Image (cartoon, rainbow, N blue to C red; front, side, top):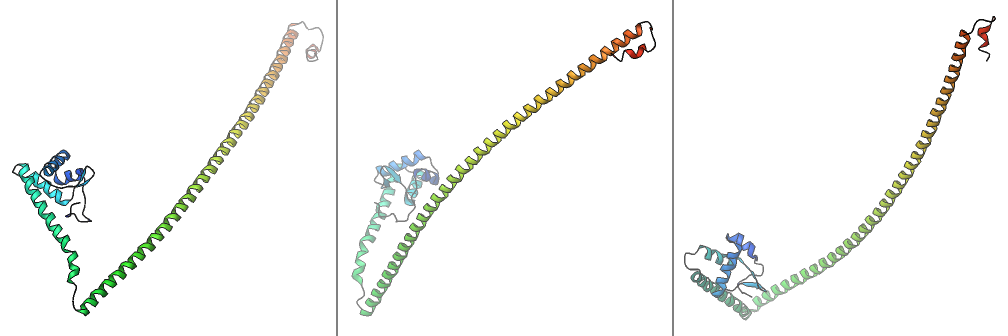
Length: 235
């Protein structure tokens, strides 16, 4: 791994670099291949390049150069090697700082006291983190249980609601069938009453016609005796 990359340094994908530099994605790959061909090192995840800020600066330099790309790439590789050497020197010098501990006993005590306080603070922080993780696990477990209860409740409510809907629909269907049957019966009774009225009316018309016929016949006959007109009503 490149020693000039900081632990929390931002990483960029090829697409993000293309947007940042203002060039096409194939051009990013082309410039990267030119840099690698001249000895430049990229951070990689398998075959995929992971770009950091210093890589973006190098790509911008290739974009803006007026010289041949390979010449500019060699200059950039030289600059990268210098950065890597400086980073390695810093890493090598760090272990030697413990050899420069203060010789004065009071200063050494203060230094050791400082280290003890730092260790205590670190231990306390670890304890807090452990406690927080435990509480987090408990909270997640409760949330999972609550989710299970809510899901079960919703499922039961849905089943009950569907059962009520089906029962209501069945009742409505039965009511509709009953009303339809009643309407059918009423229609039949009404038709029967209408037919009876028609028959009664026909009967009345028949009697009226019969009366009119006898009345005409009686008028046309010669007068035989007194009271002939009333005889037609006795028949």
